[in-house]
Amino acid sequence: MSDQNPSVGGDGAVLPVLSLDDVHVRYGGSHILQGVSFDVPATGVTALLGRNGVGKTTTLRSIIGLAPRTGRILLQGREIQGLTTARIVRGGIGYVPEDREVFGGLTVDENLRLVDPVRGVDADVVARLFPDLVPRRAQRAGTLSGGQQQMVALARVLLRENALLLVDEPTKGLAPKLVTEVADVLAEVARTTPVLLVEQNLPLVRRIADRVVVLDAGTVVHRGAAADLVADADLTRELLGVSMRREGAA
Amino acid sequence: MSDLVLLLVTGLGLGALYFIAASGLSLIYGLMGVLNFAHGVFMTAGAYAAWLTMGALPAAWPVAVRLGVGVVAAIALGAVVGLVVEVVLIRPLYRHHIQQVLVTVGLSLAGVAAAQGIWGADPRPVDKPVWMSGTTEVLGARLPNDRFVYLLVALALFGGLLALLHLTRLGLVIRAGVENRTMVEALGINVHRTFTIVFALGGAAAGLAGVLYSQYAGAVSPAQGGSLLIFAFIVVVIGGMGSLTGTAVAAVVVGLVQQLANYYAASGVGDLSVVLLLALVLLLRPTSLKGATA
Image 1 (cartoon, helix red, strand yellow):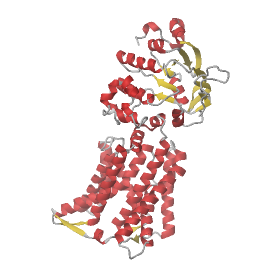
Image 2 (cartoon, rainbow over the protein chains, first blue to last red; image 1 turned 180 degrees about the horizontal axis):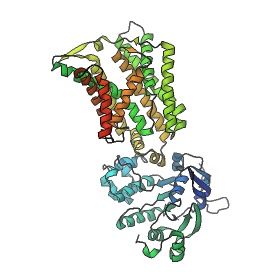
Image 3 (cartoon, each protein chain N blue to C red; image 1 turned 90 degrees about the vertical axis):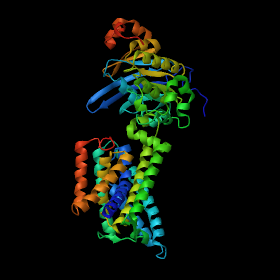
Image 4 (cartoon, rainbow over the protein chains, first blue to last red; image 1 turned 30 degrees about the vertical axis):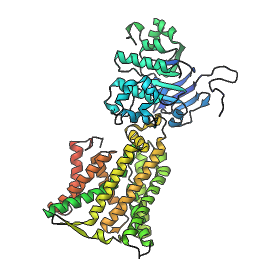
């Protein structure tokens, strides 16, 4: 086993954990992603932003092979576009989908044991980050609240060591208190694992994201520091059609 | 009273056969979304495997022993046929449902034609253990012993499949896959390997159904699997695709309705009443008995 850090190149420069190069996705006659290219650095939170329907979720799904794509995708310098979804995920990408997609007929513990057959809800990370799930281990996930289901979806991917987390709108439909809890979890996770986050909640982006990539009509139209974007009301309005003043608190 | 007891037990025995035939079909559709019209060929293959095995064993051996070995051969052949069909024919066609239906229908036709070509179209009698040919008197009714065997086998299969689904990791993956197989894969689980195992399991259950149905009919014939498949499909649709408990309940209901209608209406009305029951369930409760989409 090589002890070379896959995030460090031969010249000592820090490589991005994920690189997309000219990625296209077509569904039927629709050309959803039209040559998307960007890098995700190996630290912190990178927020993928854009109006509804510009291809943010499709970008995440294309990365793990759930959308038919062409182009080049590198995870820690290794091409993954030819691999199956299961192999890509086992190779180090954790995916938290939009709408959680927990297995409603399975218990909380069974949802977690799908990833960690030995520890499940008894894993340390669950007790530390999601203590509310421990007493609900035998409850069917379909009967949990939206916030609790989001915790299951997050816990599920954190049971495995990941090189990168893809998190799709984790605060969608959640009450403000739960939005804050989810933001706290993501901020803590991002200390050790880079996160590519699709999110519409700009205050949350301002709070936890380091960088932003903005999509429009299937292409990247802006890259930069998250603080710079949210501080520029005109640019925010132009790119996203919203202003920070109208957004709620994270 | 004795007539009713006889009808109930024979109806339950028939329902047991239907459950054994339908359980694999239900699992395969629930997890993989594959309407396996070749399931009847799996049953026919099992029936012929047992018949040939029993014929190849020394005639001095007790029939029950030869039947036991035949059952093992039928289950093994069913599993192998299921595995090969999944890997060679179904796997390249995932997400192409029309092509899957065409391939499995084609396979069912080809399987029947092949059996006719090799062994002829006429039914071939099978040996039956003496005890299974006899009867036992209960509450004044002389009940055929073979129905008890079908019931016991069906109960064992039901318990075994429930244990598999709820006590093993494979079962956990299957239950998750029935809900959302894409998400199972997105958790890094090789769902295709699970597909192959489930298809082999379905084939094994079909092989078992085939040999028991040949005992019920007293003969093997090329079209036998196809006729049992029709009732298996009805059971699966009424019970809810992918629901094992729903399948068990529906199998019992279908077996009883068929038997009671045949006796209290007229011979042959049983089949019609089962089709009417299917139509009734679909009209009044399109989500099926178990609540899954029918």
